[in-house]
Image 1 (cartoon, helix red, strand yellow):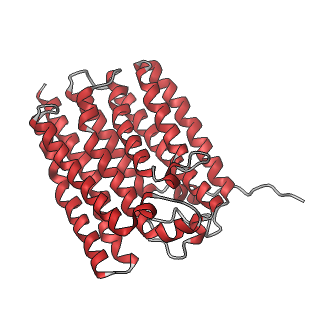
Image 2 (cartoon, one colour):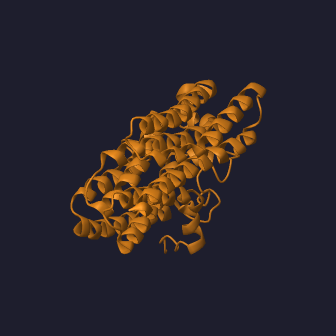
Image 3 (cartoon, helix red, strand yellow):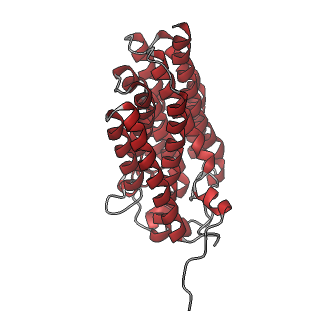
Length: 313
């Protein structure tokens, strides 16, 4: 009897990568590339394209790992009404379009691609890139996979903030060949806004995550505590950027990044309104959309600020 796993269709593989979220990674790479260009160190289009492709592949691999492990622990199956496409995974495994093994194979294949491409980039730019790339891959795997399972220990938000901070750093290192204090500080507010995406996305899933032992931050803090932390992160991200500009760490044009503040604060207001009115889970959809939009707008506006400096050189 043939027990081989049937082939994974291209459409199912595409859905496993959760392409709607990949725009966040593209924006992070754009920010890192703009930071590198602003230093006057030149710009290599080939390395930029490879960097973008590898970052997207790494993000897609992390998403596939998440679907695989949430299928094994039952978290996605336990959720009867996920707030798609934001929560509950890609659903291709739960709908029977793919098997858990498909997600694992896809994650492994994408990871191998990232490793090979990352080694080529490191040969072009130096070993400084290896640390960022390796740390990012480990975080993408450890977020979902045992024994670490960072998401289930209330450390998921820390992991994703660090991962997307590393994407920005990796993109600028791939151009410059070295780390930059200005880039490191300037990317921190963006990392906090990315953490808020995971935090608010976890709220609709919290009851089902708790049933399967996933002690996410939303489970640990509860709705009110999560909303308070969300508001603090949103306010802290924008206050932190303003403080950095005041201290003359990034260029003066970096205040453009504050364009995301109305989106973040609007999402926070909607989140508190949702809690006060005891609205159904679906009412969180606009707040989640604003949260994702805030992170992307912040990265792109800040990228524009650094690109403006580069254009003056």
